[in-house]
Image 1 (cartoon, rainbow, N blue to C red):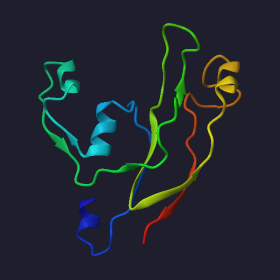
Image 2 (image 1 turned 45 degrees about the vertical axis):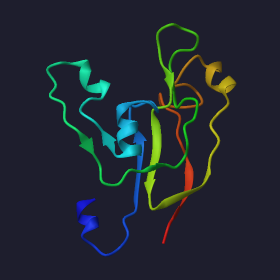
Image 3 (image 1 turned 90 degrees about the vertical axis):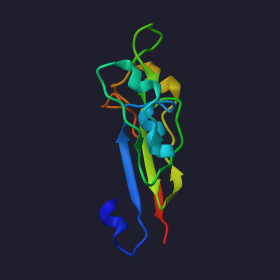
Image 4 (image 1 turned 135 degrees about the vertical axis):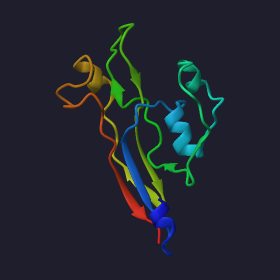
Length: 133
């Protein structure tokens, strides 16, 4: 980002993947708002961690929204996880359309992920984008 800011062209960034952060999580908040204060509860998890205010110069837009889940390992069990951990973030990019996620019935048919419908423990987020000029 620092290199790009030294050029005269507008900055465009596409940043996607498994962020291991739910929509209320610290990583999600940092990317979407550009700020994570040293007083945030995430720093209180371990008193040995020295906290600092974190910021990024250019917060990004979540281009594809937040599906109910991209990771599903629970299937009616007390243990396991069901939630959205995967995102496509953009700066200077707009989303045109997003491929629909598999139905919940199809996901739970094989107990959890990975399964016959997804070789990964995460469902893919697929989208068409347009780079803003």
